Image (tube, rainbow, N blue to C red; front, side):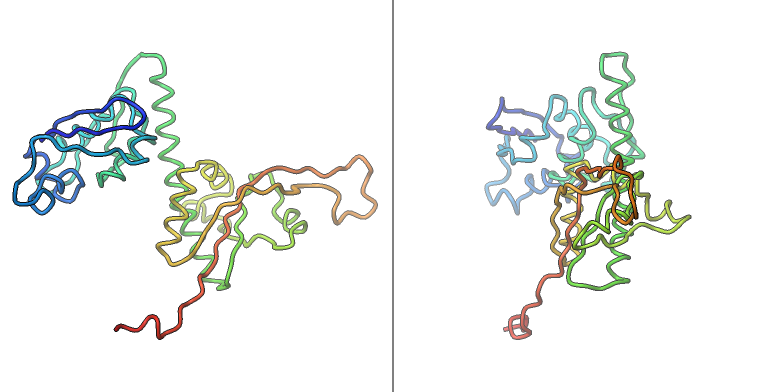
Length: 270
């Protein structure tokens, strides 16, 4: 079947996926669009036109059509994906966004990259591997966050994503609402991540958005704030030398709240 992705910000993109490939991955969006329950009694047209959503407008680059076609070509009879090569020019972070939109499951361990001496090829590989590590670190930190909330139930939480060199105790002295601790103890970094890795992935807008979505799925409300914090200085020091001045900097803070529960009468089946 042929598909045309229509963009507001550029030329349309047309690509073709064999029917057999679509049938091997029946739960993906393009496969669903090819079936009668989507197309109706008239059947699927020879050309399916799709209006590009914001995700595609932002993340679709040259070579992405080859990525989608390759994904389907590598699906086995159970819809599982074997090893495949990310097409040249396609950034992994963009491929992940498109895969999420089209419901294409990715296994990072099976993705390889084009062996090339072209300008920028090495940096693309390094960016991809760094992105994979940040995703892994975020998953660990989500475990730390949820464990912290289970251990100390409250209506709201403020989690500060500080740099490794920041003094968390000093920062909390300066705050009207101190940050809740969610770092693991010594020896738990393999499971819960580290302060340094959390600070790094928190700089990524996409991973921050993913954290908000995950917490929403858990039943919480969450927002990210970029706060100007006092990181070090003379607070708490008697007779501090005059040359010791305060140092400030911006850090990301995750604000999590427990929504108010609706009355039981509104939650009763009618």
